[in-house]
Each structure stands twice: as structure tokens, then as C-alpha cells.
Length: 363
Image (cartoon, rainbow, N blue to C red):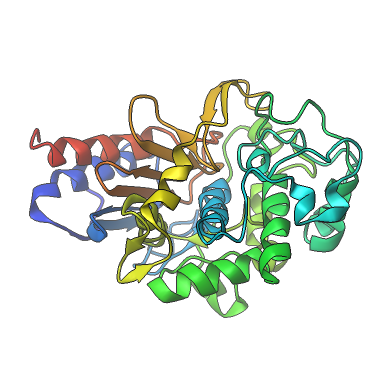
């Protein structure tokens, strides 16, 4: 039986077995799962191995690339600036980034960037990974580009470009890169081990991402083509890709998202007001996403849950961040064995449901 390390409050002990299930079935190699309740860490588990060869145990401080779960961190930065009055989510992007007002984008609003409805889901011109890692070039190309559909009318998942778009707005407002703003405003004050742009000194504790079994899952129609093996390169790790290359574990993801769950204050740090947090729930789009081909409701940077004051997003491969504003709960799952999914899978759903059953006294 796989040993699950870490601690939890006694009433949540059944979550440990629920988390273990994916290891026993072979669905997981290495992973972590964490929950905060009322701004307190109540579940903090990890287990398995940090590499495909199963030679390195997944440690308490193992971190991995969480892909698009990074978007929840980036959206939180924008929400903080909006709460401070430094960023108007309904203002034209060009108010902060004048060069953006090209090719019919004069009326594209900041909220359209957050809700994947700006019509810029990828770069029109074929680009290489080297271009992707060049912030100014990649971002300038988007400023020149024409929207593929009328902005604001529908979402079309901006899998990589959202990070450049929101990140450039944050840079224009604050004078700091998104990764720097996130680190100084959120990660360092909270002591959260999450990084957007990873220092090489942290490389030894980074887990190896195991690509999806299907070769088709390695190339998702993105530009440049997605390649999970690129996550092992220094170029990928050190770049700031605020939509895709954040590094952390479940503990750090849950810690950061607890700010949103708890009205802007958690772990001794206040970054925004309750009203500022509630803005995440303002629906921006609702329908079949033009890129994902499935129904999605987007609020301000997060997907919305029907019937609950809750939001979420996940990363390529299966990582997940889930925030319930009424229950004051944040839940995170981070792993290294990738599925082809983009918005979470059963590996996170099983312990998540077990937690809520325990919370309700039903388990």
C-alpha cells in the first residue's frame, strides 16, 4: 500500500484513503493534495515519486510545473490591482497598454483578457519556443494581431497567450513583471512556495513531468506545439509564462487561493477586500468555448461552478485549484503523471468529494 505522508485534522482522515486510490490504481506516480478551511491548512498530503523511474521519493518540498493552474495566480494579481483601484477591469486594455489598440482591438477590455474572450487564443504567426520565452517579442506580436472573433462575445481558451496579455497589463500598471508582482505581493508575504519564473537554485527539488500516454496529447494545436518534456529545460523553468509555467505543490496552491476563499486575508496576510474577492464571480461568458469545444462559464479569470459561489481552474495534465467562497475552502491537487485533460480529472475529484463529505459529517 502506498504510504501517504503529511497531516490532517482527525475529522478529515478519510481523505487520506481517497487520495491514496490513484496511487493504488497506477493513475498517479507522485502527487500532493491540500485543503485550507477558514485560512487554516487542514489537509496536507503527498506521496509517491518525483520521477518516472520512481527513484526519487516525492518530498514535502517537491514542486512541479502546474501548467494552467498558474492562471489562477495571474488572475488573482489582476483582482488585487482592481481592488486597489489601480486597474479598471472594464477599461480598454489600451488605456494601460496603448500599443494594443491595433487591428480592431481598441475596445477590447481587461475583463475580456481574464475571460478568454479577447479573440487572441494563440499567435497567428508561427512562433518557436525561443520566441515564447522572449517576453517583449511574444507580447508585441499579440498587440499587432487581429482578434479571431468579436471580443467579449464568446470565450476561446487563451492557453498561453492569456499570461502575456494579463501579464503585460500588470507590468504597465505596476512597472513589475507578473512573476515579480506575484512574488512580492503574495508568495513572499505568505510564505507560499509558488514561483512564476523559477530560480535555478530551486531546480534540484523539481519533479519530472511524465507526458500523457497519447502522442496526440503532446501537440494540442497550440503555437508553438505543446511538449511536456520542455518542462525539464532551464529555459522553460526560468521564463515567466503567467498562463502556463508556475511551479509549486498543492500546499502552496491552496495557500495562495485561500486568500480568495477567505475574503482577501489568510495566513496572516491581507491583500484585498471581500468585495474585491467577490468580483471573481462576475460572469463574463457562458457557452461552448471556441477552443476547448466544451461548455464553460468564465468569471474574472476563473471558471465558475453552477449553483455555488465557487470557482476553479486546472492545468494540462490534471492539476487543480478549487475555491469555495461560501465554505471558505481552497483545495489543490498537483501531480507529475499527466493525463490529456486541461481542467482536472478524477484523481483530484475523489479526495475533493471525500473532503466535502467529511466537512458535512457524512464520512
